[in-house]
Amino acid sequence: MSTTTASLALAALKKNAQNIANTQTLVGLDGFVDTIIHVVATRESATKFKRLHQMADFGAKISAAAGLSANFEFITEAIKLGGNGPIMANALAAQGQKITYLGNLGFPNIHPVFHDFAKNAHVISLAEPGYTDAIEFDDGKLMCGKHEGLKDVNWNNILKHVPEEDFIQLFEQSALIALVNWTMLTSMSAIFKKILTVVAPKLTGPKRWIFFDLADPAKRTREDLQEALTLIAKFQKTFKVILGLNLQEARQVGQLYGIPPCSDTQEAVATQAVALQKALGLETVVVHPTHFAAAADATSSAVVAGPFTAKPKITTGAGDHFNAGFCLGRLLDDDLAVSLQLGVATSGYYVRNAKSPSLNELKKFLGTL
Image (tube, rainbow, N blue to C red; front, side, top):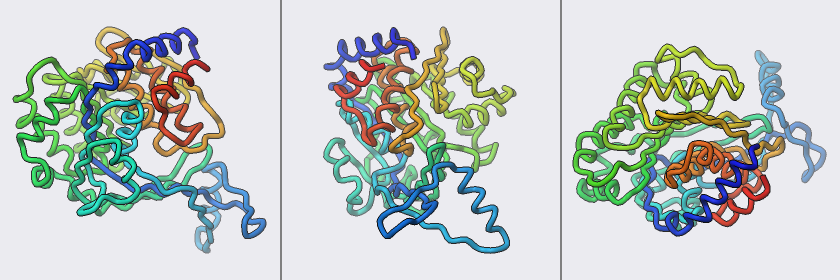
């Protein structure tokens, strides 16, 4: 990792600490209760076991049981707030930003897993949360979701909880808006259309940053994905748009625009980011594989290696923490490399410590890179 880039990122945080504390941010629209699970490989006693570390080993055990049966023991490591939105918003709040969160965190009562989050953010809950069993391995995770509550995240229900003028004001007062988890929120494209026609025309002042995360669109149709991307591109007229993608998402989106799937090298991913930025016409496109991240805007591109660890304490939410750090860099109006450095550092701290870094903790971590 470039020491120079880490030093620049550290300097940017020190210079802008007060501005960060005064930043208003709006995040939504999902909400999940995450159960973090490990799979037992061998049970040695009532209290001692060895876990499966590699996803392929779990897959092999499942394949071997085809036509027969198998018994798997799951160990609950933690139950925590989940969903792309709450995890990203929690990370932004830890930085010191003033957060308004709109999503399904429990209704009529907020689910207990979100109580601490609600102390650090202004929370508007629309519906019951979804539930995810996150089966974690050292090299990846399986996200097994139950999404019943997500159907109530729609425009009409939003207006039942937030009158239209108040909803417009939430956008007006925010320097950053993050709308995430398009894949699981089946009414998100319809919400995009309402924001473009009802909210955007009434906004005043300079363009605000707006961040979009598709969240693994593989299960959505090609037509739905194309519509969502077309709508996201329309936001560029009123906002400074950031589209955040993991490597697989970057390949999927690229195929819609005739861009061949890239390999996983830094050069190839950076080239993919440039091609996607040009094809979509957005302010910024960022792609974050596991070991590094690349981004492109209209004038430049950059790649920054991440502080990779082979033994993470947690992986669920790592991408959302990257997104929070990267958006922090964009808010500071610094160059792409600094934004990427803040992204990989925020994610790197999180997977090592299983918690979101405060601004001071992020500064200390950057000082070690």
